[in-house]
Length: 124
Image (cartoon, rainbow, N blue to C red; front, side, top):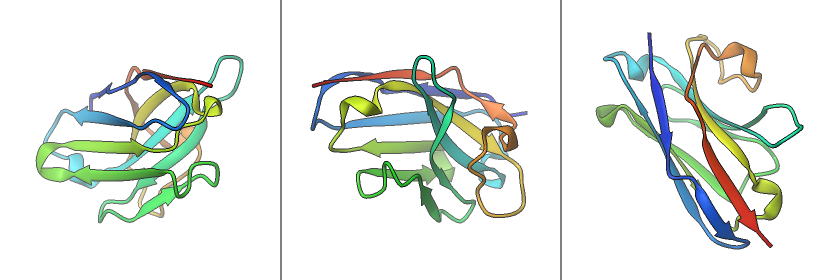
């Protein structure tokens, strides 16, 4: 069982930066692939980024070169550094954990544990 709690969201202007954090409970954090997803009103939840157990990152094309995912297994935490934010990045951002054994999945259905989300709003 893993419990996840996101923080760091807020209201920013286009071009600004934000850093989201996700704190995980439990002593098995390092065994999980960690992912970030987002969901805008009226839209499906979409993949943003994921990081493997040995810290290989994967990104959606829409955020590549702007967002950076990282993890600190000693702190049971995963981070999402978001730069050059755009209004279309506005969404609730969710942290998720997956126990799959292959490459980090991009489908929400392959993640077993989810946080409650943190809201990011980017004004133009």
